[in-house]
Image 1 (cartoon, rainbow, N blue to C red):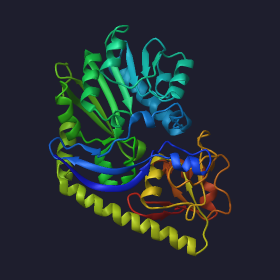
Image 2: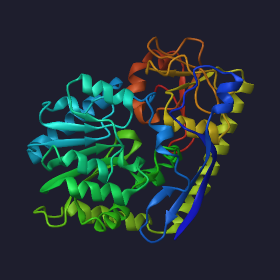
Image 3: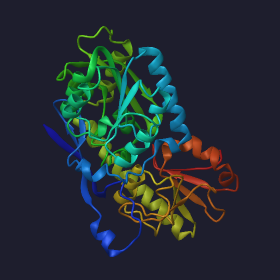
Image 4: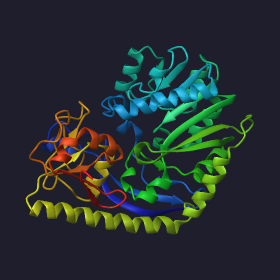
Length: 398
């Protein structure tokens, strides 16, 4: 049984940056109701109304993982770690983006699956065999006609985007060698609840995973979790190490420890999510009041990071260009465009935060350490950051 616990109101597709503000563009902008459900049977947390993936993953997909220093370092580290641990003869990445993970492998040792045509073209140009398709059993069958089964299947921030998890995991089972490993990482539900980071819910995050939910779902596809890691990336993620139920891997003690922790946190109880929803409403009120107070005091406020998460915040809290002058972002193909829904102008961040700015809301709060280092001049002259995680607060130099 699925029970709704959170309504984040009507939201746009977070990747739909407008090139200009005119009646036609505004009229064509797609909105959907962003409500979140809890499944009382398998403990999965999902959106009640997933958006059609064909509307989201187009040839104009804007996110480029390689443009972040942090992400480059992170993916290089995990690639080396997985190669060392599993020594795969043949690997596959599901959701390869612009090749930030792929480039750490020899071209004949890995293939890619990437439905966004503009991104698939990038990895093809890099020399990697890339299937510009959505991952499912049909694609798995097509690949297996040309390739042997895979010793390693990796996916980062993609599995949580796929509505049909049963088909996804069945396709993995079909493609994985008997002692192969399926390693995937996505935002972690335990962190979302603990940090009140409700902006982790947006159109692409069809699900937000816990260990207890994933374990229940994998069983139906003859798969099991044998190891797990909690990560700091994206404001709190989880990396699952999965194998066939017949595989040689022993279940690590970390899996049992995390399962016990999740049960203690109440991730299997609907009451936990009802209480979370109350904290979300309180956060919305406090953030809006703070921004209104700063405007009344004639302070100049911008946002740092035209992230998908910030789109949820701006649209749920009804924050527009009256409270946020503009958004700074380092991604070139977002610059000069307008944020989804609230239509705030996006400017380049390469020259730093201008001297006339007093406050910057952290749309990319998960990169706080990187941003503070980059914007030290802003902080030294008295500038301050605003965040809503884990509570609405102002962050200065110290």
